[in-house]
Amino acid sequence: MMKDIRAFFDARDVVEVETPLLSHYSTTDPHLDSLCTRFREQDCYLNTSPEYAMKRLLAQWRQPIYQICKAFRDDEIGPNHNPEFTMLEWYQPGYDMMQLIDEVAELVRTVCRQSEVEHVFECLSYQQAFENVTGFDPHHVTAEQCFQYSVDNHVEIPQGLEAADDVNDWLDWLLTQLVMPAFKTDGFTFLYDYPASQCALAKLEDGPGQARVAKRFELFFGEVELANGFYELTDADEQLSRFQRENQERECAGKEVSCIDKNFIEALSSGLPDCSGVAMGLDRLLMVLSGAASIDQVLSFAWERS
Amino acid sequence: MATYSTNQFKNGLKIILDGDPCSITENNVVKPGKGQAFNKIKAKNLRTGRVLERTFKSTESVEAADVDEMNVEYLYSDGESWHFMEPTSFEQYAADEVAVGDAVKWIKGQELCVMTLWDGAPLTITPPNFVELAVAQTDPGLKGDTAQGATKPATLETGTEVKVPLFVNEGDILKVDTRTGEYVSRA
Image 1: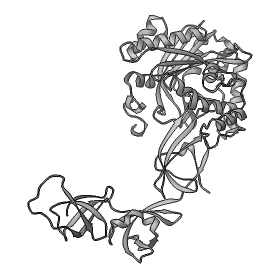
Image 2: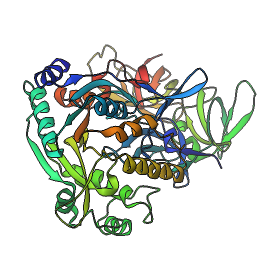
Image 3: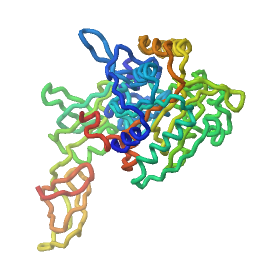
Image 4: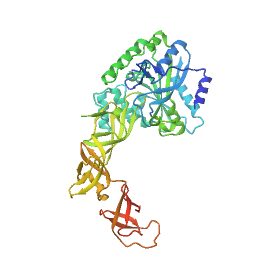
């Protein structure tokens, strides 16, 4: 699989890069927690993805790059999660979201060509996917309405998820309970145009309706998430204010506030080329290829035995 | 009140669900890619043995159950309570019928059992995996019968009935697996 991936990028003149796994900065994403270690009495962090460092390279070199590296996330363990995992991340200057989606599908097809996996790809907007299953428009729904919908349709409501919570928590829950189970079980699904409030590092655009949408996509095989990509936000001020907002969310959730990566914001200010980028979990792709039901079947030594 | 956050969840952790102490047997993180995580757990109710399924929004906290396990020796029963002793401190505990449960079928005295305590009171008694008990009553054995699989009922000295091979006689000491209630061998 690794050979195929490297050959794929070689043929497209995408340069392989290597960036530090250990950083002075952690992530502000309120749903991700970095693993912390110490260097000379100072806290430092293992990367949750190489995104910031790769974008710094991209701002400097302005050419397509890819990396295969380890990423680390605290509190992620289960059949699809290991705290340490292998990530493939790449950036294509000049690509918009749909062009990158095509390239992701191309890569997956290449890697799967000798396996029994059917390379059928379905492409669904977040709105279509929700409307197909629930009948409501996720861009205009409130948490209260999601709560009522769950009660009316006997959807399990997790302990701690309240009608007054952020609507995104509800959308995330209903996505896992209703929308993802409706995906083709033995095929690939791209979900794109996420709600603007789930933009992370993606550009916002006006969607087909009145709603603003995030140019963000995810790739699933069955219900397993394989990749997350963005038509990348290049505006440094907007990025900084998103990070600050995320830090406020962290504070509200009682989590440690992260130090914002100044080097990354500086790189954006100096000018990130218009580009799209994507991160793919290679352990999970290997699970798909080998038909493994659990991530520890594709790891030499999973966390419990590491 | 001690609590556990969902990021402390792991197999064997003791928490209170629906007012009963439970032990987590499965803990899975459910995450829609990026975004809010949820913990789906299976937990065994330590009182009833029933398995519950629950989902929590991650970072929720759950009340911890003060549950201990210790090895105790079975002493005697006075008809209402079953008395056990911790063999190093000699401290004695009285377990009621509910706590003793099925263990009563296999213990006659001096067996080393595992006792689960909740807030200091006996909750369940688990007998040793194998016990040796004498046959109190069974039909006469058939000499030379080696037919595989043929069995007959036998009543043990604790009053429990088990299926035994035809060659077993009254007074024989048998080794029995308490988890399945099956005859293993003659002791």
